Amino acid sequence: MKIDRKALKSAARLAMRRQTGQSPWQVTALYLLLTGGLSLVLGLVTDDPISRLVWLLQQGVEPGQALGLAVSAVGTVGLFANILLLLSRLVLDLGYMSWGLQVSRGKQTGASALTDGFVLVGRVLLLNAAVTLLSLCWYVVIFVPLITLLVPVAFLPGGAVLMPLVLIGGLALFALCVLRYAMADFCLLDEPEQGVFHALRTSRLLLRGRVIEYALLLLSFFGWYVLGVAASWIVESAAITVLGGMDIILRQDMQAVLELSGHPVVVVLTAVAGWAVSLWLQPYVTLTQAGWYDRLREQVGQK
Image (cartoon, rainbow, N blue to C red):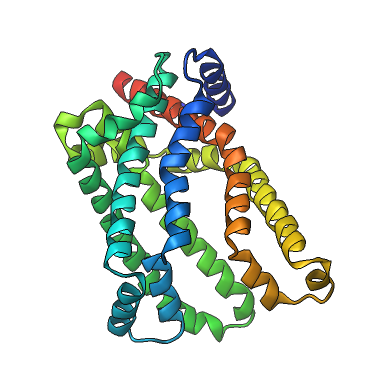
């Protein structure tokens, strides 16, 4: 039976309004500070090793040499801090989903739920590693043959049009395959004693034949995400104009614009603008996903 998206989203908004004590916006603000805020501060004082590695690879540096250069550029302390931040982010993500699941079920809870992931830290890290590995496997399975297929397609009449369509189709197929594990976090929260692989199997079971429907649910928030990007872009453009003057805009000096986009003031203001939208959007999406998960469990349990 198809799940009513509008009713689900309406229930999520109602659950947010019914929270007493710490509001969803307060919990989300703390979550954003502990994840995005710390990441932002760390990014201002040290390089991101992943971004540095990607940049070096794009410059044509050999993978082994690029990895060494990226690590040396970040430094031992910076590398350790980035790894620690990544691991804590994964655990806090599960804690935030735990908060959303409890609120969706009508419970009064607050920021203390953000620590729920630390009790399951080993399982959280294993689950994320398993999903990453499975996603990589699907990427190889889908895109290796796809890239091989693109060679003859390029020589067909209208190949210039067909190639982007084939790539878009491959990306859509990859997304649908990976989305089968989207409920694994909720499954782990409900049945932590069953382990990581049980959570993955349960997620696949719940989303069997429902992946496209779930993808459409996520796409229904597209307008909100566009609003967040637009808010960040407007604030970033305004900050660059103030710092660099209208002259760089009139001269269309892209080099100066790119340099100013990395200015600490611009980076912070841009992030804050995006977070302002996230204070509403993050709990809204999370509670909707939690409600979707509970509806799926109900329907599977009835069979």
